[in-house]
Length: 536
Image (cartoon, rainbow, N blue to C red; front, side):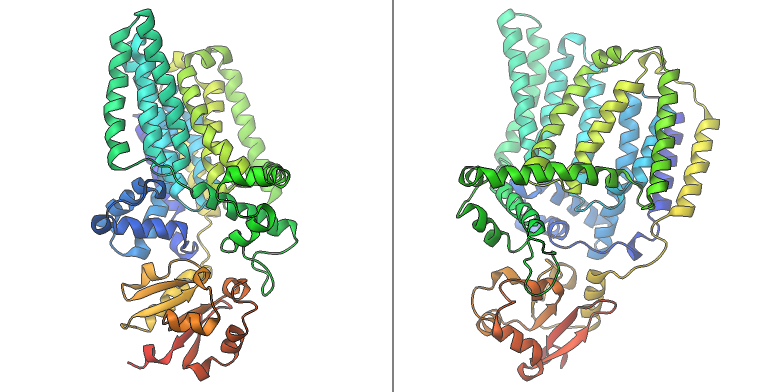
């Protein structure tokens, strides 16, 4: 009953915490909008490529049955991922026999952390949820399966879980391979020794029967996305090294869309991460070192509550939480750290294997928040399990006074520091609302550099990406029948446009070409709209 009460506290706190989120958080285009789009197309177009998050696309499809409005769907997924993450963390830690008060306090801290509240894209939250559920099932298999078959059952569950996660984030196919090899080694070892043959063989066979259909019908989550990710993030570092700002203005290079040009300057014409390393190992290792150097700054910011950017508040809060944890550890003397390491070795090993892709991604690609989200969360879960798990007290007596006190404290904190109280300018939403207000029914080919407004505007809208420009501007405009342009700092800074005299002349004299200007409220952006679209 106490666990149910705690889960209710977490969900209620999450609902209170996310009230007003739509008025503050802008829609994120490119990655997250892409996943939403392919999710809605799944029924007509089929599953996307295995490296493009097909399971996440299905998740969006399911949510769309509840909320068909695409803007509301985006925020629905945002809120669900924000609330479900701390709730499942609570369940996993309780399954690991961590005291209820610590589980609840840590879950509420996770709820308000920057890693949970502000990390984008949200696909990493979905991957994290799958990993947490897998760890929960692995732990339960240890309790339900006879000891002789528990390791095989756990390995099979972990392998299938990793395969499912790889259909969200393809780098976790590495974890699937590791789990599969360990499972095969265990089965082969038992067969050679003729020991526990059946109890180790049947879980492996069940895992095989589940994995093969997925690999056959969904496909192998293997592709060249790693090169794109490496190239873009190397470009971020390169721009930083060369003292440019990403959105400085004319003359700067925007790394996300100019990455091929930047990569070629350092590595030449390469098509894979391995080729980049071989072409210029020195600059490659500088990139890795620079990534690792960033961790000291990024990780503390992720742990900081979203409502607090004050160093003194942050230090005080972390100090208070640390004091509570140390005090709790001193009270828990019934089990030693060695005992916990031994008893939870399967869970801890499974957790460590799930951390491998994150470590590789952070070093080789970039310590992005959504990479660190999974790695930091799993690290904290492992440390808390080792320090505070107490299997001798599995039937912990419900202390409703403690739970009620935590509820009162969390409610007070959420009321006083809720980050979504003050509405802010949301550039993407403002752009979408402005275009919707024009009530355009004719086909629109919209040139923009932000990645996906058309997904929220209707079937008559088509995006023309800035990186598709390979000729002078007027030829590019006429060939693509561009009749709407979002002029933003990113577009005017793009190397394909910044030195194009036809483009610069067009900006100054757009009326001569039949375009009118509409300002995007609250931003420095503006739309150039062909008069044929608004003369209906």
